[in-house]
Image (cartoon, rainbow, N blue to C red; front, top):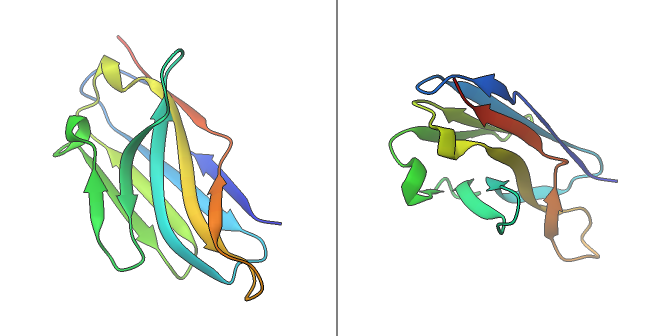
Length: 121
């Protein structure tokens, strides 16, 4: 059983910073891409940032220059450092990872339970 557990969300004032963490655990053979998505009520879940197994990163235009994704492959961790936060960054943030659990099965996507980030004065 694979689990992704996020932490680090909360309430922050505009201009402030937060750091989200996501830990993958369980019967993991290999983790390919890892990333962060976010969702607000009535809207589709959108990609915030991703980090491939090859070391490439990708960011949504709205967060470029403010957010930084990083990962610790040895510990199956991915982080999202969020600086200069804006009210429009308010959302539930979800960790995502493409994980292979066995040589018998293809890798597939797993999701965390989400962590609320609220940017408000």
